[in-house]
Image 1 (spheres, rainbow, N blue to C red):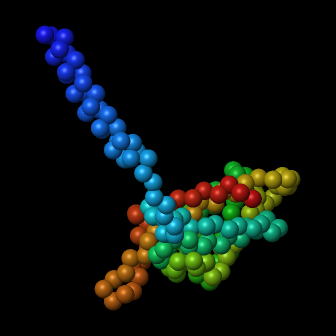
Image 2 (cartoon, rainbow, N blue to C red; image 1 turned 60 degrees about the vertical axis):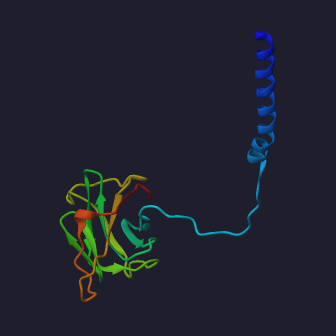
Image 3 (cartoon, rainbow, N blue to C red; image 1 turned 30 degrees about the vertical axis):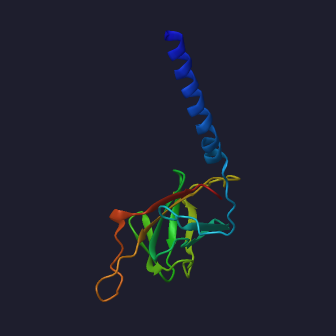
Length: 171
């Protein structure tokens, strides 16, 4: 009698599992082809692009806004101990402490209208220095979003909320 019940339960389990296999296979093997594209989701802020060139110990820097909203930008130069960086004032650039600020907001895809020009000179002029074949003056750039007042005028840059840091140890 026990064997009869065991066979009956096994047969019912077999019938149920066989009937469940086909829908399960259909679920895991169903595919659909879709054509077309959509714009990728962008998360976070896009750092500005730093372009620099060196001509006769003068470093010239241009910053481009690659983001989707207006930003303010600033840069700082870090030089070797026995060299210093002197700022050449250009329209739109000011120096405050160690930073060089571009005073106008940059719209998306816009670059600084004038280059930031930095002369690289020895700290002690009375001594002779052999200019090495190469050394780095590191440029650190930062950006912050432009915030507007109720009249639509940009509020002076708020560097407490800087959105990006980028260090270029290039040329």
